[in-house]
Length: 387
Ligand SMILES: *Cc1c(COP(=O)(O)O)cnc(C)c1O
Image (tube, rainbow, N blue to C red; front, side, top):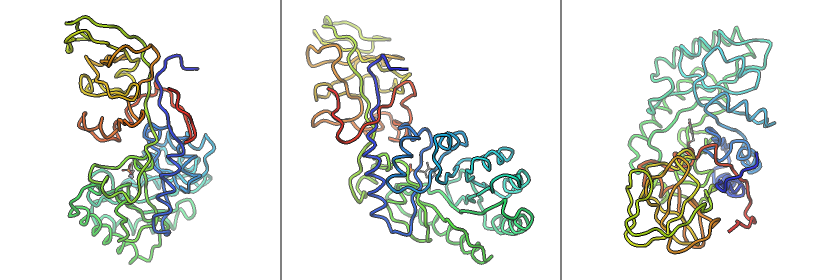
């Protein structure tokens, strides 16, 4: 449906393109790029982001759910897709049908997966997940891996080309932090595991371990030939510490905008919004913005965050409601005046990092939080943003 409310997200696809191609040009050429488009591309829209990243050189897509993978296939995207999350064994034939690579999370899971495979479908490509310290999914011991290697041999004899071992990977818990102690432990554990696999004479096409932070750190030992690029493709640094380590500037792709829906000159002592948490000190110009916590504009930003109007920072006042938010204006403004909640106006900028700090969270959550009620508009560098 055509939007009737003036609240929208702008996604600059050129920023996505530039971020991905900056990484591909800067990285060692032995590595392929998987871009993480889970959670509807971190709120940016999985399909347009995936298409743009592919143009910029990405050769893999990573998702959390099978639903997300199928949506990409239905949009006509044909490149390899890896499901990074757990898939219950009974759905393996669905993954086969749509040619989605899946993650095997341990030996028990592997046995169940093999029992469900259907020989008359596409082969199942799987990536074995090793838990080297993330403590989330994956095999936790070398003994289990050793057993797995034996079971794999037996299963492969029976299943033949129905089962393809395509990758082995791990996930890093602290790659975005200054202290490298734990990271080093995870990498050593990965080296030991890979050595064991090679001792069994098994060659696997892909070894991968780097998220955005690992990519920025240029992790090359153990050798790995695929990176899983998420947050930094969208133009955000994985952490405050990582800001200082960026090899080139990133371009944030997402901005969030609205337009004033109501403006009034409030009397001194007038309460604003639920709970009367803000009371005007003198005569004040108060504006209403048609965005609220149902749009992912967190209520915890009440009386804390700022927005940009006419290129200037202005304070939110009173509690954020489900669909509306109030702002203290610097003076009279017209209805329809543009409000930027994330992004730039003139020389001022409000970043996802700034909002994350106010909320005690990470920028990942800020962009994922913007709900599907807010329409996404796709733009390019030469787009003249409406004022
Ligand atoms: C989401 C995810 C990534 C991407 O991480 P970023 O920090 O966004 O780069 C990589 N690997 C796995 C397993 C993930 O779940």
